[in-house]
Image 1 (spheres, rainbow, N blue to C red):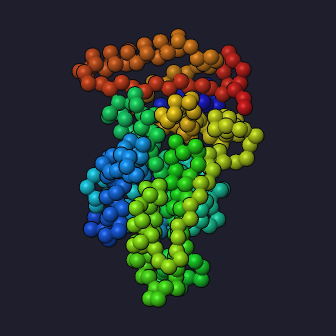
Image 2: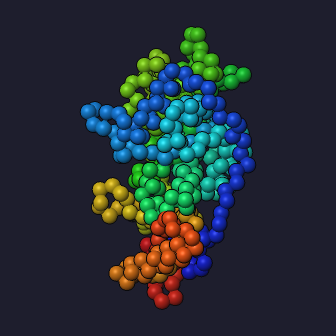
Image 3: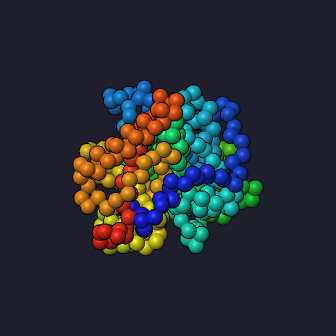
Length: 367
């Protein structure tokens, strides 16, 4: 869905360049608790583990990008130092400086510069980071589909996960406030909501934790969140102390921070249309969920499509077999052309129907 019937912006080649300081990712052996959590995540992602007598197979499949602001970077190093990490991890980045944090959010289009969070160690900040990381996961999956074929791109989108973590931990000077962390998990298939995990660390332990020990706890909470809280008690038994506990919450968000504004719309699709009317988004991508087969539509803002994607514009009011036949003919023509250019293994491209908000032959789309 686009605001005007013009040449689609997502047909232009786009290279994302980040000026952020990621530093080097350590690959030394992780602490035992983090190592075991990382191993469980990778095993479950490959469907090799039994949970409650049931094989944890594709339903828990995740393709993850992590954005860590401050403490918690040990989650990244624990995962990438575990064999099989490439089946789970797409990217891990540490946005340590405030400028790096802001650029990451702005580059991944989750908010405008005028709406940056007032508190960088907050639930809101963690959710924004997770939405930006989700956007990055979608970028990577879309780019890789150029090499593997785009026909199942939208199925792959549903395994994409973004993780955001923000924290305030022990420093060289004593903090007056709480030592705390917030971890958010976002995906397109989570009914446009983010799962939030928060914890206040006891800074009055005797002896007190070192900064490295607090880092390990926060890293464990990140991995705990990636396991949907089902970590076989490792976090509780080996990392948390005393009355410390992880509280969980489901925070309603829309596909971007802009879509979270109050409107009269009652469904995700209506909110997506409203966001274009309000010029908060230039375009959104709607595609069916793999789960349940009940016709639920998932919403992805700022469409990220592979370079070989075929964009078929029209009003589709209603969509009919002629549209499908034209789309199939376009796919056949693309494959025929590319195969004739000595590329016999050309993968089948994706097809999306582009609906303009304003069409010369039809009434404007409205909520």
